[in-house]
Image 1 (cartoon, rainbow, N blue to C red):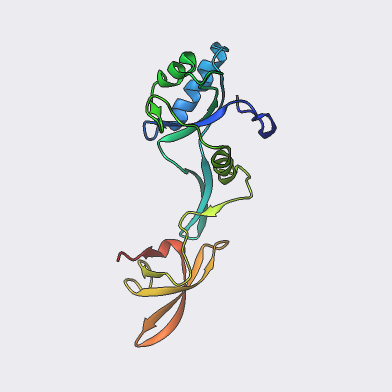
Image 2 (image 1 turned 60 degrees about the horizontal axis):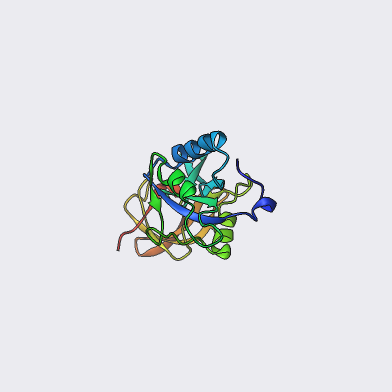
Length: 192
C-alpha cells in the first residue's frame, strides 16, 4: 500500500497518536482494512524510523528505532473540497484499535506542511547504507568509564570513531592527562 515517492501528490500528511508500542500493529490493521474498503481516501501509512548501530563487547549490532514512539504518519484526504471533514476517513482511522486520535487541532486536525512532511520522510531514510550510532557522543563531552581498568574515572572525549564504535578519551591519572581508547558501551554520560 505504500506508494513510491513520485506518486505522493494525493492527500496530506497527518500525525496519528497510537498506543505506545502498537505503531506496527496499527499500521498493519489500517493496511489490512484498506484492502477490504477501497472508498476511504487513505494512501500511505508510515512509521518514521532510523537504523542505529552500537558495539557491544566487540560485536556490532544494528537495530531499527522509531523516531517518534507512539506516533505514525498517514497520507490521506481528511477534508473534502469545501474543507469539511470526510466522515468515512475520520472514523476509519479513529475507529482503528490502538489509535488514540489525530495530533493537533482536536476535532479539526491540522496537516503537516509539505516542508515538514518532506523533512520527516527524508530523516527516515530506509537506505541500508545509512546507519547511525545509537548513542551520539560529542567531542569535548565528559563521560564516566563504567568498565575496564579505569572504571569510575571520568574522561573528556577527544575523538569519535563511529565505524569501530570507539572513543578516545583524555583521562586524568595521577594528575596527568592520559589518552585512553574505549568502546561506546564502556562509558556512560555523566549526569550534571
